Amino acid sequence: SNNNNPQNHYNNNNNNNNYDENEKFLTYLPHSQFHNQLIELKNAIVLAYLTNRTLIIPPIIHFTRNFSIPYAPLNRLYDRLNYYENIKRIRSSYYIKHDSFIIINWEEIFDLNWIKNQIKIINRNDFSIEGLYKICKKAKNRYYYRFFDTINKDNNYELINYESYYLINDLKKRKEKLIHTDSLFGSFRIDFKNENIIKWKSEMDRNFLISHPILLKVVNNIINKLGGFGTFLGVHVRTGDSIFKENIKNTIDLIIKDIKNTSQIPSQIPPQIPPQISPQMIDIPKSKNHFINCKSRNKRIIFIATDSSNPFMELSKIFFTFDCVFTLKDFEDLIEPLRDINYTFDRNIKMLDFFYPLIDLLIIANGMDVIGTPNSTFSEFAKFYHETLIYEVDD
Image (tube, rainbow, N blue to C red; front, side, top):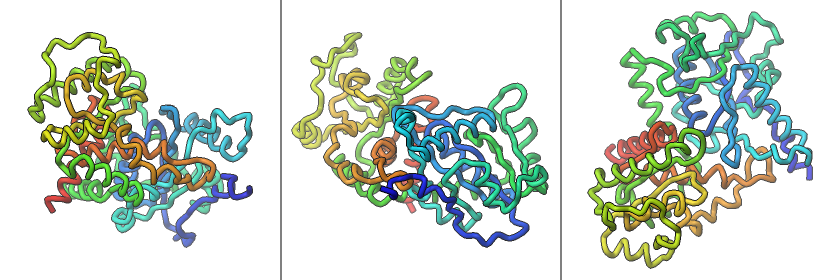
């Protein structure tokens, strides 16, 4: 039916069309996994605030099957994003294997109300240059636009080589209608010196909370089942791709050590662990009885968030070392309400695949502590979210 064609949903959502002649804009391009896109957005919010520009926010682009669009210089990144977006528009069976992604408006997932009181934002639902020209109400005139590639000549992942306060002052003075950067990814990309800005940034972070009502309800049900806020230990093990795949053995050993240090949880086995554990050797904690036993014996419960498709196999050493270890697979029945949520711009696609990591993230953030995978942005965000929730509880 006509409604199922994503093309119908692709008009730019400009929030409002009353533009002031002197309004100036800032935007960037999303790339990599969701948590990297989140870091980009937060950096963009800070830059828009400091330069007094309206922030044009590109949507989240999320692929299934552990794929993501890697960083590339501006024009190459644009080509890639437009290529995928056209696949969605054309909707040809010829491209079906490439049509495994969704484009999501940030405000479907996060509460941006605090931010909207600080800066003006415009959500966009596409990646085209033409769409930007429309928003800026200007024809393609090179004097109106400034495009930045942010990688410097030494290929360091830094925002241009001079001090950040100079850069921001420099950006403030720019006359162009639109400043467009390739990527704003990098946790230390903006170097804050000013105490007021540091304070403002912390407040922004604390107010940048996930607000999807059904997602939060599902997560709360699982947390209550685990014993409630702060009663279990949250652990994140990234197994997925590249460097994480290569380091998985070290990561698991490190995490086991951290679990022992954090909670003084006694191991259930002598230190001599067989090098290869077959699945038959593990009492996989699938049964409800196992869960009830853990609670009745007052055992410390450990919840593992992971991108592993077979955690009992891949992370068997953790299950073998500690008694009461659970993953999302143990709570499949509670996830039911999220199964049928359709994705706004493409009614044929369900959003569950996108929700899984967010459920994981929110559960571990609600534990007594978060133990993460070194160099994982997901782990960093989970730890940060945990601090934010503790701050709210203390408040």
